Amino acid sequence: MILVTGGTGTLGAHVVPLLRRAGHEVRILSRGHGADLATGRNVDAALAGVHTVLHLAGSRTGDGDKARTLVRAAERAGRPHLVHISVVGCERIPVRTAVDRGGFGYFAEKRDAELVIENSALPWTMLRATQFHDLTRNLARGAARLPVMPAFAGVHFQPVDTAEVAARLVGLALGEPAGLVPELAGPRPYAMAELFRTYLRATGRRRAIVSLRGAGGAYRAVRSGANLPLAGADLGTVTWEDFLSTAAQSTR
Ligand SMILES: NC(=O)c1ccc[n+]([C@@H]2O[C@H](COP(=O)([O-])OP(=O)(O)OC[C@H]3O[C@@H](n4cnc5c(N)ncnc54)[C@H](OP(=O)(O)O)[C@@H]3O)[C@@H](O)[C@H]2O)c1
Image (cartoon, rainbow, N blue to C red; front, top):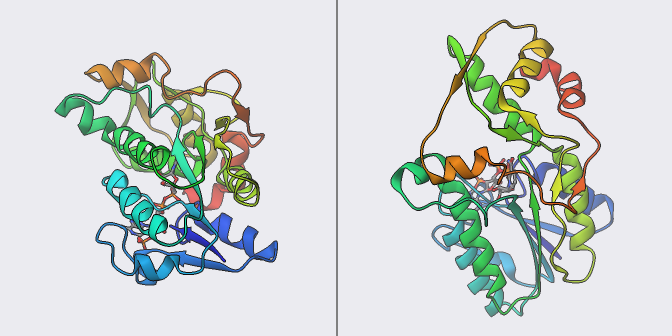
């Protein structure tokens, strides 16, 4: 039995069918399925009889606490292999002030979750991925609803295809615990304005893109590329342009 936390999310929707097609029995842990990692509700029951956990549940806030709840329950449940998805750069983006937390608190939460898992008594495997194409598309779609699209000057992203992340995670979940594995990113980095321009072209829209400057240490770290993969990362093959051309109908 493999437990997939967040199995109903964007990533989980790719991971769960891959596991089932490979012949594995899969249980999903999510609030929609009756368990909650924020409160602990039904988490022990979800872990009963599980030998591997893919931990994909996440939200804007509280991922450190969710990891703590999951790890404690997994330690009680016989120490299954925990496979965790984290985010590239979370250990390199300093989140110290309220300004940092406003824009980049998510990275601190992901780092907190990593430390909880690294310091646990569980066998674990951890993959850091860059932003998924789906998330990047949602960001562009939201910005395109504004009269002008605000793009941070000097900030780059290297988005990756969600299906490629899912395939990598499933491979890791079916293998032995491997600790921190090489990062996974998309084929190349794009300036934020370039991501937006490509989105506008793909969806046949016209908007002006305005350049913004952020403030604080976390923003400076991101400007200097702390959210981009390290040397030695694995790169996916599906580009932002490929993704937009196949997802064109749903981007309008
Ligand atoms: N999106 C990206 O670009 C990106 C990049 C790198 C890493 N990641 C990480 O990858 C993971 C999956 O991302 P995603 O984009 O698939 O997220 P998503 O689409 O927002 O899905 C989140 C999933 O987590 C579940 N969940 C949220 N809060 C929960 C709670 N308190 N208890 C139990 N389940 C809860 C949700 O189901 P319910 O709402 O029913 O609870 C849902 O199944 C996250 O950990 C995220 O931080 C994402």
